[in-house]
Image 1 (cartoon, rainbow, N blue to C red):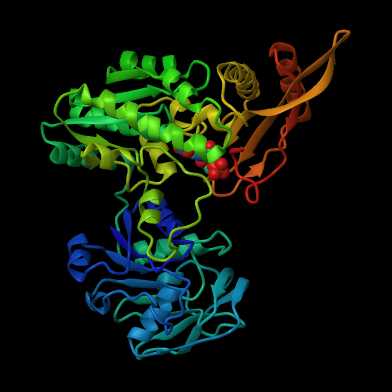
Image 2: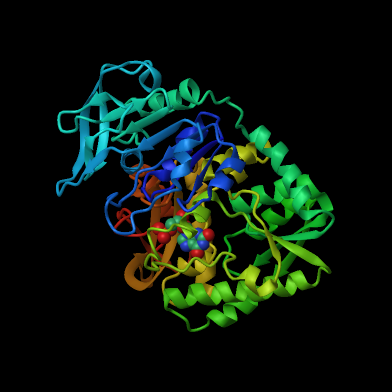
Amino acid sequence: MILIIDFGSQYNQLIARRVRENHVYCQIEPPDISLATIKALKPEGIILSGGPASIYSKGAPRVDIGILKLGIPVLGICYGLHYMVDSLGGKVIGSTKREYGFAELLVKKQKGIFTGVNKKTQCWMSHGDSIGSLPAGFTITASTANTPVAAAEDVQRNFYALQFHPEVVHTKEGKKILANFLFEICRCKKSWSMKSFVAHTVEEIRQQVGAEKVILGLSGGVDSSVAAVLLHRAIGKQLTCVFVDNGVLREGEAPRVIEMFKKNLQINLRFARAGKVFLKKLKGVTDPEKKRKIIGRTFIEIFDKEARKIKNVKFLAQGTLYPDLIESRSAFGGPSAVIKSHHNVGGLPKKMNLKLVEPLKHLFKDEVRLLGKELGLSDDVVWRQPFPGPGLAIRIIGEVTAQRLSVLRKADTILIEEIRTNKLYYKLWQSFAVLLPLKSVGIMGDQRTYENILAIRAVTSDDAMTADWAPLPHDIMARISNRIINEVRGVNRVVYDISSKPPSTIEWE
Ligand code: XMP
């Protein structure tokens, strides 16, 4: 495994993904990790990440200096380089000017970390400070016009350092450079695959859980579905899934989930039909945050009630992913502004006094999809578009009523049908309809109509952090609009959302 020390760079998750793409397992840990823990992890190599701080500023993050005395190969990137240089007796010089963007890298030695890399290649810089003098034993291995020490190494001690970012796509041969560190220098083996993950995680789950019972909140989305199937493989009938119909699901969603899990996979499943309770609590509520909070709280109540019907449960399983884990313990970003309260299962563990099982907590989303495939789940589950916990309630602007839900469901069904028929479903990150609390005048036959406006949103994205509105082909947009206006009573105008994220968000509320 490769240990990545997180000095707070926005690119850290990218480093981890690049390592894993090479079939090498890695873990991101905060700088306050103890030397004993590092030793216990037995890493083949250590990557010290970039970060926003200046090495000489107050409170600049540092990791136990013993990390440089373990005899394990170390790669410092940007701030990681500054940390190494400063710790080993060199000098970092502060600068008020940032170097940001592309630079031409001149490689002096096409060996070691630069094996097979062109003599001139494009790299991506993002730094303020730079190297004044290198510690004894180091030599410069690459430069750019503005940065004489763009890369350096001390082969004796197996120390490598880069001022630029090999993990971002703008560094043309960055993948090669990282692979060289893994295979030329650390001598890693390509042993990380979803097959091996299943084998050792099944074992881990069995050890953690023993003969106890586990419950899991199933939403029908990728993460909880994959977690359920993995747990089922490990502990079979000790697992019970709880699926709550909150009344704001899409058409046909509840039967789909029940059929798949209960009938096909024969997983213990409890189904709580609670739509009425949710709708009652949402009556008269129009504020988006209030809607989210009500749905979150009610979900916890219902889930808790359902779970209590199963005796002697000791564990709660969740489909937490690696980005959630890293972000929740980030020492640097501090609490960011709440844009939207994601409810999911946040409040559950505290309320229920259960121990957590989080078998996906070291995986990225794309790895969860691969894992799903490995476990035999269909493309339809593995590549499902994300659907928010608060469901259609945040796609009905204004009050959520049974009647408005019915309008939105019909429109959404038509939209998804067309998107699927035209082979766009898997190309889009999300595609959905939003019901607006606005009416407009129309004409149908010879009659004046005064009905609702419906918005269509379709976006492309890699991770939902940013998203672009999708330029759907005009003929498909025309068909979607025609069908919705003709087939859904209560809608007489369809508009298309042409906003990207940021500054808009994907969901409207
Ligand atoms: P926004 O609207 O913030 O959404 O751009 C980013 C992604 O998150 C999904 N989303 C949610 N997912 N619970 C979830 O599990 C929620 O409360 C929630 N709110 C938004 C959204 O669909 C998009 O994929």
